Image (cartoon, rainbow, N blue to C red; front, top):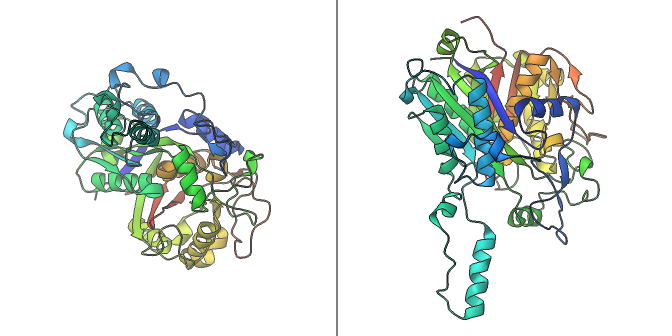
Length: 425
């Protein structure tokens, strides 16, 4: 099996419009939750979100890559990908280093859909005219912005990639599956370099209303958004919707070293499972999550004592935080209380399809700076939630290996193990 390393990270998140600013936000415990701005939420039960701020697509995405047909969230994804590609030095890479067929793209994202407002306008038009066939025509160029594959095509162009291309829609575990499958493609020799990660934005009024009706969002902090996302806290009442993108460059290790690339971390293991439980709930016994974590550790060939950090899914919902804690205890046994567990969603909100990508960014930062980001807003843990969640402030400590979790609506689970760069075989 080939070894896969991460040589660059790019990001557009509620904490910053690049990877370094995002890391600094995580390291300092800076929150990104505020008043919702994508629509007038007055009268809605939830009026807050963690949103990208001051993003300028014209500055973040070169014209030759193509911005014309990108949706707002597609712009986030392509901007994060371009940052990663540029940092890895792949934007000017000669064809004789990696052939086009050795380059690929794997991204997690929500399935493209037209704006609900367009469908409502058609309904109003038909009701007003009495014509059941009345329709509002949209130019093809506008329709293209709804297609999930358009941002992936732009990413393939920037990388000159004609190899594997995967657009994955598994909700909150999307970037986990994308990074995991990119890892597999390199392991098995199907590619030598993969651009992988996720991008998402579920901040329309339909998204907010739907999640609110499910009881998944907190509705108690509209006037205090900074304290809304509270993973593992006894007073947690639901997650905070976020948006953004995180992209990483994975390369076959020997090829990366041969071209002089900087290795940030190595992907060591990947686990993927399905709960076969309720669509919106995590199993109380942690099953599914347990198998995903165990699978990632087995794939990495590591015992539980080799992991210092778990970057939790940590949504701030009652069921997820309880189930994930149960699962961590089951998997790690007596080593569970030697771990530190951090929850980036306490600061950045829930980036849905991009959430595991953000976890990878946090883990890489922790390894490179020997600094574990905190779980903010953790004032009082609930019974049974007794792990070391790094409350309030970051902790200085060495991290050699980390496990990152993502658990999704529908019961899809992914876990990734990454380690600091190493010289051994």
